[in-house]
Amino acid sequence: MFDSLTEKLESIFRKLKGRGLLKEEDVDAALKEVRLALLEADVNFKVVKDFILKVKEKAVGKEVLESLTPGQQVIKIVNEELCALMGGINTRIQLSPNPPTVIMLVGLHGSGKTTTSAKLASFFKKEGRRPMLVAADLQRPAAIDQLITLGSQIGIPVFHSRDIKDPAALCKESFNKALVDARDVLIIDTAGRLHIDDSLMAELRRIRDAVPPMETIFVADAMTGQDAVNIAKNFNEQIGVDGIILTKMDGDARGGAAISIRAITGKPIKFMGSGEKIDMLEPFYPDRIASRILGMGDMLSFIEQAQKTFERKEAEKLQEKISSESFTFDDLKEQLKKIRSMGPLENILNMIPGANKMKGLAVDDRELVKVDAVINSMTSAERRNHNLLNGSRRKRIALGSGTTAADVNKVVKQYVEMKKMMKMFKGGKGFKLPKFLPF
Image 1 (cartoon, one colour):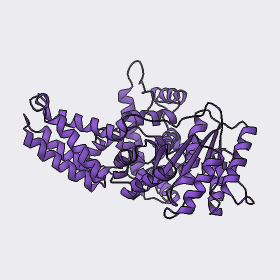
Image 2: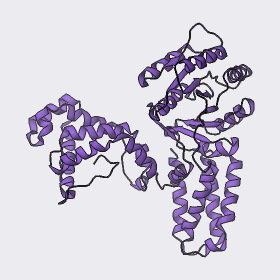
Image 3: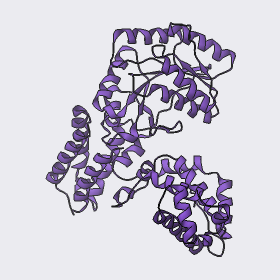
Image 4: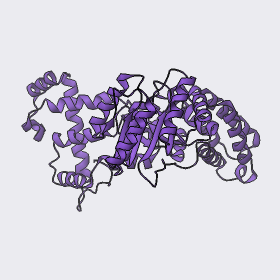
């Protein structure tokens, strides 16, 4: 996410920070490069033009050019303007004072509406709500089956019918069912097309009139760049949109849609999908995304993600194991499992300030899978006592895990080094673990 743009902006600002006092021509030269970087990231050209003008207006002021750290001041201004461009603050989905809250998801076919519907329902369930999903995409029977499968995975009911042919009538029935079952959030997965057409818009308007939604959310594929922005604008003009969810942000190396869509449509980005798993939907915070774009990381999101994954009691139990030097391969396996559940390693590293500057750092989730396979091939005795792992045992483990002896040796070496590091940190009062970290 934003990898290419982040790299280019960091290079530009590195030159600014290396100077003493700045002149107006220095700022002009830097902003010219920033303009090019944003355009290459597929940001709308009108948005880029307005952005550069606002930054220049603030950056060429006397208090900036003659300050002790003018380069940093310019970066601060760019950060603030980027944040403002994407909406400034996080905007939540509004809930109705008279449940159920109806949320209608719209968008083109292939944007990820069905999966996003389930992700959103899971998000509300974790907040203590009682959501229900509605399979209103009657054009594709597979979409109904997909939503039923996703609903069963997360324990959320899916209202569907093979007999009702009118999606508006189906949604009306689902609303009545939600009232009877005391469901307070109703999420409607509507049909999409490969392109915008009159029949699609007419269908969405009928649904909107049958069960007036509290919010209509446009689901956009971030990888389509400016197309997503233009389509969102079209949907907003024809049926009205209250907010946007950007999907496939983990695969978008440019980020133009995320930067442009708020400015063009005037509608806030409420969530973004950062992976295929159901729990990989996170609220969109413009200030945090601006920090990521400028290579400053996003520690708040990292901490929140870790807090969801690691229970405090489990962390204290792990601390006791470290203090008593009884940390085993089973414990390591459990911690790696939790780290993997936080999402792709690359996404996690992008949240940590400076991690993107670690040259030669190979980020490969398959390495964690390999470590897991090696540990699974050990006997319970070997997991408890690594000193048992002689040459013949390591060969057996390599065969059993589908790896090589070198891979097994690497895992054992890393485990031993980790135990040594834990022993070094363990002081007289015991090693104090951060509230949000596994070790």
